[in-house]
Length: 119
Image (cartoon, rainbow, N blue to C red; front, side, top):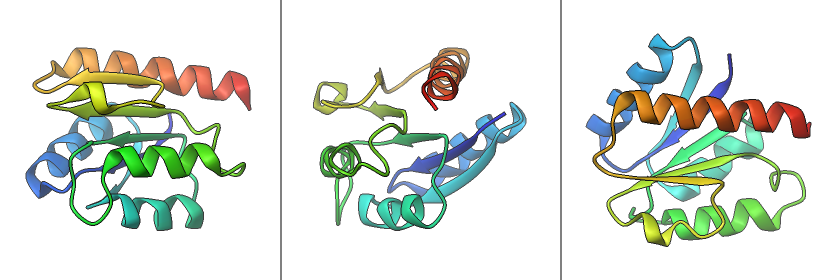
């Protein structure tokens, strides 16, 4: 399967996403904000970033912008999950909260397949 980095400032939501993706066979890492996510991506690039948009320290908008501006990270697929998905400019896909688990997995799997084709 794939390595997924889950980025959300809500620990309960990170736990839920970790559980969903782990049960589907993915390896899952976590970050509580965009700054921590950037450090994690540079240390060990994931196959997919799943990020909330509204977070302290660095929000999802800035995280996506920085990932897209860096040649080393610009091709990593990004799935934005947020109550305000319209902020997800630059993401490969966006889901509005609340979302269905099946829809989340289907979109994530599609982005992982697309990412493998690009690499």
